[in-house]
Image 1 (cartoon, rainbow, N blue to C red):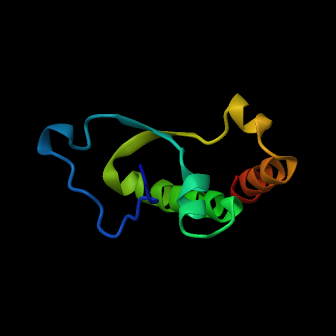
Image 2: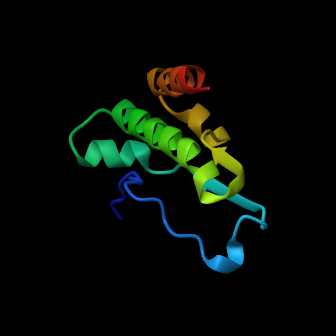
Image 3: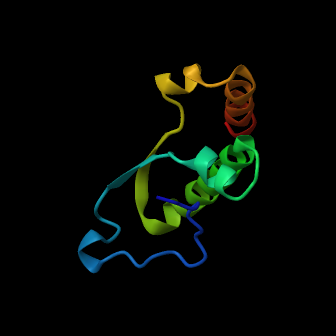
Length: 98
């Protein structure tokens, strides 16, 4: 299955029943960024960078969307089994964006 990064061009409308009085918690599991890049002939690190840029846009949009808590899961123990250059690229992105 091919996936692509989420692009927030227009914030989704929040249903009235989930208005500002509700405390929304959204969790995002980043998966498939490397596969997305490879499927487009790009290095895996380009997919990780695209995912980080998308995460930044989501973080910026979250308050406008009424999201009070945002959890981003970006690194798992499985990532440590990847080639050292890819692991280093992911860690550099985390450092840069955090």
